[in-house]
Length: 374
Image 1 (tube, one colour):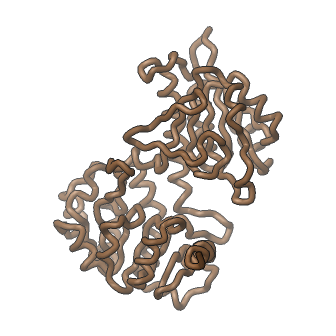
Image 2: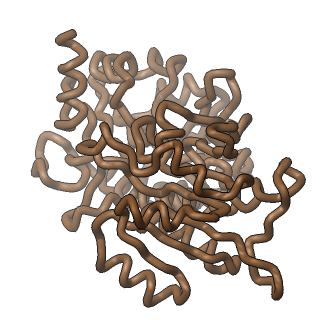
């Protein structure tokens, strides 16, 4: 099979590039070549992550000059982000698209994939039998870690704040950090905060066993259930609020932390929202996104960092981590996997956004059909 990787071109609404990862590393190319497949890599695709064209060539890739040629020749497009508008017209009928698709609320993009009968397999929806989403996990860990680093940076004087050290200095009070969520992102943030010597309070929604595990493995970290009184107690006098909690769809009419509750934090406090959900658990960040070019906004008297796609700024590490979890599934796909001949509860089938000109994913289909009915 011919596998193509292009240079990511996703930008914010001001035209600033927001994606620097690459879908395929030279190591991935070497593996796929050994399996007998041809790898096309657009010139410069890995440059931001420190991978030169020469490294890809040494691994066995063919470097092609344009994105258009990648699309024209590849049987499968193996990348990072959903196709951008300028790329929609490049698809060929029946091509496989293996990437983060996030089709919800992208009606035009999905319509184009359907028109070209693209077999769209979304990283974010591939689910194994125990319920895990393996291609989201490492990115969540990276996001949680970086978000905590960013929070500390925005407490410093050179960013316009009063200059608060994270901790680990005798005679100086450590930063008080509140982390919402104890999943992969939350635990990464907890590890970073605890290692920095901060006072850490983690707020969990319903997974007591995980909270107990955290308290046993990270002495000094306090885990509190997400009741209103516990949340208020946690926020009192805090320096950082790091939201790593995915807010359930069933609670979208509620918030966990209302705008007035932020007054309980110190005046210089920083709010970091890793989840970046437009209908998430923080009232101040609902409907708000910042960008890598303009990372912070002043909301309710507090500095807010609400950047989607945080792992992109760790381009090298995130590309390696992404390749680690996507490559085994890519091998299955290029090894003859056919969506028409697999069980509908198999991991890759669960990841199918669309195929054969129709929407496969049930959640996306419900949304797409509701748009058509309007």
